[in-house]
Image (cartoon, rainbow over all chains, first blue to last red; front, side):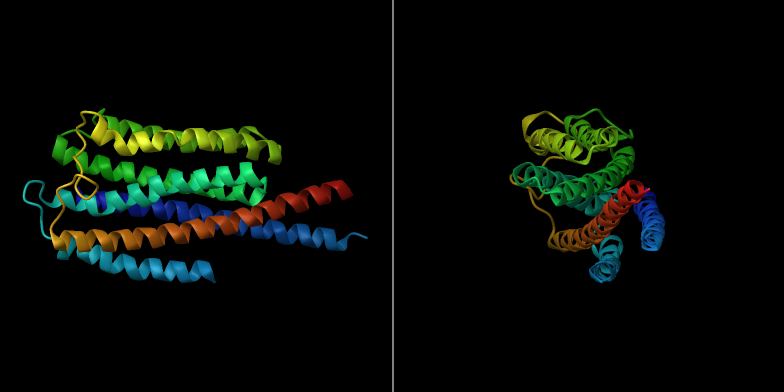
Length: 42
Length: 225
């Protein structure tokens, strides 16, 4: 039961970290696109 | 840079913490190996669940006093930490309860109030998602965050106030204390979990800043069209 408990906690943090990483990558890409879009405008 | 340092420190402290939990700490006489869950369950509850509640309270109060939106961002990140850490803590509680109590969950006061705390964090996010206006959202969520924190002192004191199946105090006031090696292990776990919390929180705060920048630039781009 101990191993399962520690594994479950590790899974919770892994999933949260993974979601944060993908969110960060998506946002940084969008930010870059928006900056370029605004730069091109007169 | 700060995020990377915290990530490295978190990993560096987690390794000795796990070593101490599984190999250094003596096996408890009555509960056996299941008691080792205590070393991660308690820091997750204190640092994660209660710590997030205190930070959420500070964030909400900070916003309502100063009207500075950075406090709202701080509160939202604290609430997210609350969801993750309280969920992890409840999972460890269930994994401990099964071999010791013979059931995954007993409707005792501490456990129920801990679930209420998790639901308060989730409700805070539901409220945020229903309010598109930034100022209004910050104001209403600030009030909700403050009211939600009523659960925390009752939750903490529940083992003193009510008849409960939850173990009686061990290290908190009125507790019997633990073996010195168990105390060292618990301290190491507290350090590791605190650093993990700091890492995840600072990272989430960084993402929240980028989110706001994206929202602002989207509005500028739409206004220019």
